[in-house]
Image (cartoon, rainbow, N blue to C red; front, side):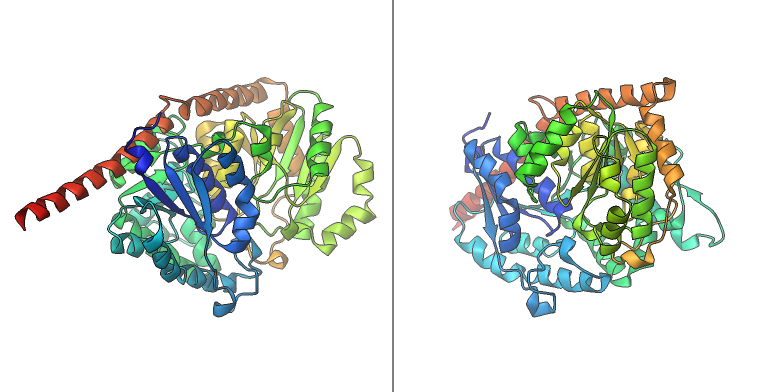
Length: 503
């Protein structure tokens, strides 16, 4: 699989310290290492502990991957001690400080690179880390951007920025349609990326503007998607930027059960065992899996409506309640309602982290109530599970449009506005229990509509698995990326030889 020259390559991967960036970039590291490369992932001490199991499994398979922790200066910029991941931020006001701490990693990274052997052949960083372009320039190596969103989101955002629709938006208008795309994609201002960001913080908008500007300086763009999933939007985005490589779904690098379980925040052995045993006892395609990501702060009132909607649907369910949403109010409500005892045998609540890919790939799971984060969306697609869409903020509304309007493998709950993802108290009830129950029933229904959704979901799952196999489109794109880096090294070596001859 690997050529002798590719075995000499050393790729340096640098994710933003957030689960939605670290997890897919670490999975991509495994796909690169399968081609015989050496891969180093820059992280921080606490994140290194959190994600070391992913790398440990890779090492057992004789893949050349390492985590290199660098000091994250959280306290130097006023962040709480141990704040090394976006999911530990307690308010939006800390967002700017977190990015400042990330930028301060530049100097120690440059010192590290000087001593690395073999020398890095390229840098691959996620899009918010624009300072890594300066590092790449200093060491005269190419930088590639790893995008954690879809081509659909990237292209629609590009169209909005290009046409200035949002600047001319009439405040009393209900919605607008994205122009010059083959599908009818209708947004309200608050659902678009820029609208959500402007609503929450000017600092965040400034960061987004700088990220967009830095894209033109990168050698290429890597996107966690596959060409067959969104062909029109892939082709359109390739006309916007040179060297676009679709390399996903990266989560399919995990083949063994233990790899699916360990993906950052390891669930306890009891949770894992109880969950699988419970799923084994359920009928095929009968269970609803409900999970809302790691950064969403949902109000306690909305959590109650979700819980009541799951119960009234009469389908078995697994409901993941992450630490951010497991508030004292939610705990008290569950206890006062005797909730878990009432649903015993039919419903399961998991507090904290759960083995999502393992659950989604279980034959008993028939529906995914999701916040529509891109990682979760791709995992649902790869497992062939129809989705019930409950977007909350950022690009999640784009992903909902993609799931429902384009892929036609999901039903929307009916969320119309984004939440303040950093303040649970400001978020009220977005949808009630009756809306939740109604949309759960639709994809699970045995009628024609439910059958069509399940059929399309199954077809996409089969397609996704083929794409990372040898000669699949994403597999070939990874090869093209490696060849691009090798060609640059050859050109650089040729230039050096020519200079030597003239001296």
